[in-house]
Length: 323
Picture 1 (tube, rainbow, N blue to C red):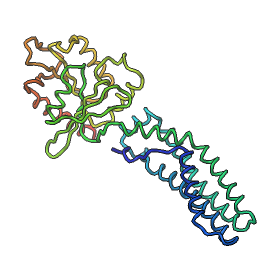
Picture 2 (picture 1 turned 180 degrees about the horizontal axis):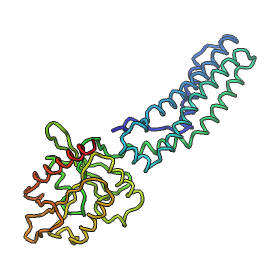
Picture 3 (picture 1 turned 90 degrees about the vertical axis):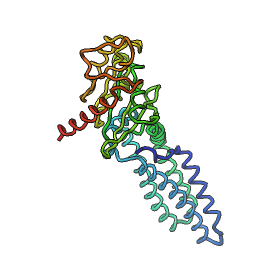
Picture 4 (picture 1 turned 120 degrees about the vertical axis):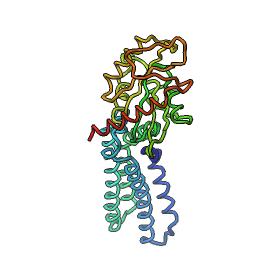
């Protein structure tokens, strides 16, 4: 996943402490035998400290991805959870500070070589570097918070996708498990209390992903907060079709009318093809419905393969129309 390589971002105090300790260690390794060696020890202290800071700050900037190049799905979620502009501003300030510390150090090294009191200049430079680091502490805190949030995003790929929707207990997770022939990966969205389920299957050498999103697509839109609504919107950036499951036995605890209303809300929310399937055809009180496209049973397996074939065809047709 694109955010996995972002390391923990230290605070400005932690970086300063690390840098200055290394600087002192570098200086104490120099034998003082006169002005030249004393000057060398002061330069070594300053250069070592500055290099630690500039390298660490530059590394922070490099470890975050280029937000102009990441998939639209992740861009939307990043903007939703943290704010892409905020991240760019903080990364820019961190990168600028790295360059500024480098310039400042070179300036003071030059001044120290012609000065009778290089130690005072070294301390003065340390003070200015400390002020620069203090000025970006809020940026470092934001970046570390962003890192912790983004690393928790599910590993959703830019590949053909089936998004499964419907009320709880309509058979969504059972469908994912049935068509992927394995226990799906469970990943947590940072804006829901439940994990999402992601499974994969192959057709003609092409991998498809199937996503069940409990906590997002299993209750009326009126009961969602703005963050959840925007997260749902992010799903539209996937190369996806939607499978909406109706429990035609009402065994899930929701009436046909309630399920039909949720279906309409999902259709309104997504500009994606939707296949409506009646599930639980194995139950005696299963009802034939005039607004569903197909029927199946995730318990017996009846109709599952046919439903999957139609979903794959819908994805292929969607891609043809896109061109």
